[in-house]
Length: 372
Ligand code: ADP
Ligand code: GN1
Ligand code: MG
Image (tube, rainbow, N blue to C red):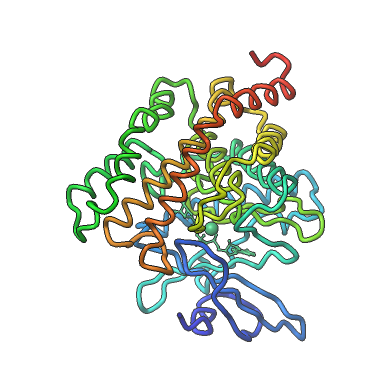
């Protein structure tokens, strides 16, 4: 717990601090929701400590976020969007005008207005929610496609380089600092058996068949806020990893996060499976806004779901072997439990892959009759 009243003094809040509490279920940053009094009106803000063990250059990260959010707002205003202020994050400046502040302990903090009358879901409940989330992430990529200026900073280099993630796992198995590897050999073998998969997208990117785009790279369902009433995806949040990437990383992570109807934290895996209707809802939502995709990207949408699930499982497993230094955990076995959850979903996706690929091709033709 941090002293959020103290933190609030670092920012140009123009309202009186009332109280704050930890908020959300993100694995990386420390997020607080704070209430303020503005002449009798209650306003809420998000104060967030950027995890500098994960993001080594919070200053460059915030430079990315400022550029992306300014550009979003500019575009929304050009479109005369009636709710521009609610459709993008906005950084509240700190006292010296910067979009982040440093506390006495060397932590970096940022503040966003709370986007009211929305909610974020940890587990998708309906196909409509999946469609809306996918539409929002596709629209976000449309928006970043026109970002002027230099390439964004890579806030975590090689973030979705799955082959490097596998290599990091192999290194963790060799180092095995907590002697955990022997008990999880089945999971390690599961990952190693899929080494070829880990190279597939990277090789296509290297050959230039899949283009680099500005992508979000962390398209968990709880990183998009859905309107309380209409369930429309109103605002894409958690922009820390918005940087050069592939559209397939964004789509694949949505699949990972949505089609199982089970949280990645669930430990009872008896019911884990792929809900084809939810996959269809995701493809439909994504293709309805991501008009820029080339045929190779469309061809790999179904595979990307399996790849990002495998990659996330590999990351949970690596973190478990290295002593749970990266992802926040609530129980000592949570990272290995999450790994098993993800690998069970990989198996389920593998068993339905032909169906998922056929369905993707049908949907791609619906949006583009020339699609092969
Ligand atoms: P993490 O990187 O730890 O996942 P997030 O930026 O995703 O952190 O924030 C954690 C949670 O806080 C989100 O899932 C969402 O529920 C909530 N949240 C973050 N920013 C806002 C905002 N501006 N308005 C409303 N809720 C927010
Ligand atoms: C982390 O920050 P959060 O909780 O939205 C992680 C993602 C993982 C996800 C797994 C910067 O996302 O890459 O897919 O956990 N973010 C970072 O739940 O590593
Ligand atoms: Mg998040």
